[in-house]
Length: 136
Image (cartoon, rainbow, N blue to C red; front, side, top):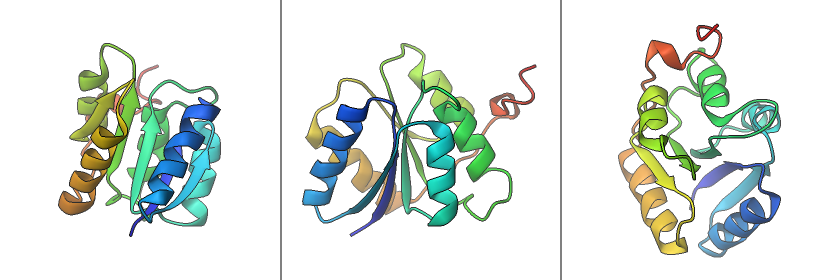
């Protein structure tokens, strides 16, 4: 199966999702903020990164931009964004990912979205405004 990285500051939610995806046969690493996720992805390239949008230290879009866009060898890693924010579709568009889902979600919905990301392997194509350094 796939090597996955989950980054979410909801410790219980991240761990529950990791355990469910491990039952599907995936290898899963979990980070609890964008900085930790950034480090984990640099240590071992995931096949898909599942990121929360709003996190302390470094948010999901900021992590995606810095890690997957700045020529670090991870530009082809599909990103799934998960969040309860109303503007999730807009944030996903800025990050350049077609893979996103609102919270709460069902296990089946995430498994289907992950299957789609693994099948299509669409790389992020961020808009210039997604650069956290350009936001000023």
